[in-house]
Image (tube, rainbow, N blue to C red; front, side):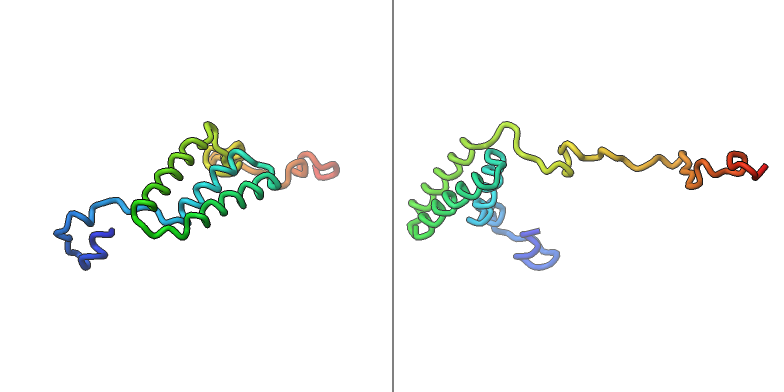
Length: 128
């Protein structure tokens, strides 16, 4: 997709640098950090204090402008994120892998749903 967008529709780029993976932007790293923290602190009051601490760490590194410092801060942050990864991450109950996922599957087509159950003519008194 990126090659076609940069080189023009239907053309392929000659540059090999276009094939390098792009680094994630800071907001993606921040969201990933928050989702990881949500696995550890499900209670909202604890999560909010941890959220503020994570936000302060991102703000502290926002002023970095030298590539070496930026790369070192990113590597340290990713190492810390890998260290804090949860062995059993939180999953929304209705999402795939959650405890309520597909709990009430649809009724198979060969089953018949009777809306007048108990009111059939042979059951109702006086309708013989």
